[in-house]
Image 1: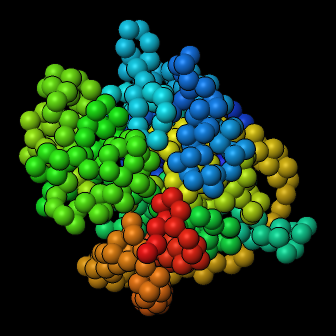
Image 2 (image 1 turned 90 degrees about the vertical axis):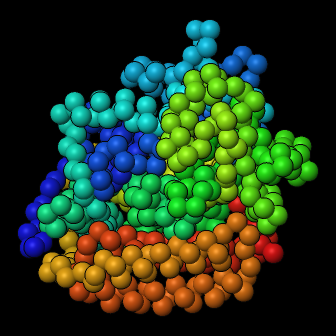
Length: 510
Ligand code: SIN
């Protein structure tokens, strides 16, 4: 079990197979060999579950200035304006690129159908019904699977970045690849590459109620942090206001586009409450709607109501949601949909410049794992797929230059002691610890935060960290590695939340 240690060499190592990773891999494959490692199948990523769409200025009545202002306003002006400008101005080009590779965006009267979400002053969200992420992934995967320069490693979990000292600048670490666990064979593979890219997506699994897939355990942030990369703004965890809230059922994301198309939030008696909180009512930025829900849920269950749009429209516009909800016993066209907030998106992450470069040479990041400053204190809806496309494309240039420079570089590899003798603690014990951390974070570092509770949480997390280190000494498997990452990210979120004394955007303290 796990005794082999194979080595694979490539120019680029992409960790993660969401839209950011796949888009980068395709473009980078023109300049070198690319290895993509992904924890499950290529398709399993946060991007795949993005229902809403991708924001871009595509209507003549709209303008870059308006999209920039909406993004800054949602982010409480803590955004990096330069990053926002770049993202917004490059958006229409990225939409065209997606159309060119076969993404079948929804159309109306022969024009792209543009929908609306919270915080947007215009209809500017291109979408594929309510499965936009899935359709973009499908189109990208089709290209990636047919590309001879790209190798795909599914069921591989990266668990350590290789950061030896550079020969010429002794003190300077640089990243030359990663150690990766093949979870089907329980073997460790060493990837030695010129440029290592983190495109691992989000951290939703840190929280008990979250809209993310099981793979979203904050791996990229944890790996980068362990390697000494700069991590920023982790306190800004965005809670999506509307995820299914039915006992025993998963917190299925109910897209904000349901509200964008007229859905309202009500109590059982049909009374709306959002107009009391914000002039944009249900379409206020997500942090505001989530906090309003937090308050209203104290009075009783909250529902999303879209029945007034009629059965035919609902089934055509939201085929995925209609079907999923039907399985959970909710008919979107006939019933009120019980909803409550869920952790959804990490606005902070591994700090990068506008070209995806981290503070560690050879280590790059983009997409949800990265912090370019584009989201500030709260991300504007449907800017995430856009961020993935824009910053992964921009990073191709910087990585291309970097690998050329690295052509003849030599580095001294440190010896890395690893226990290959996998004797994991029982899965049950690991899962219990994971679930306890998720509950702790949900109660104590959630939508509304208190300093005292957060300080207590940090102490408890320290104890979990010690326990996890003990387990890791006995060997590694996927579950313990994910638990280690969840604990590491939970600490980063709590520390950052404790450091920010004022309430702003997604960070709210009482
Ligand atoms: C949604 O459809 O509400 C999620 C899309 C996003 O997070 O931008």
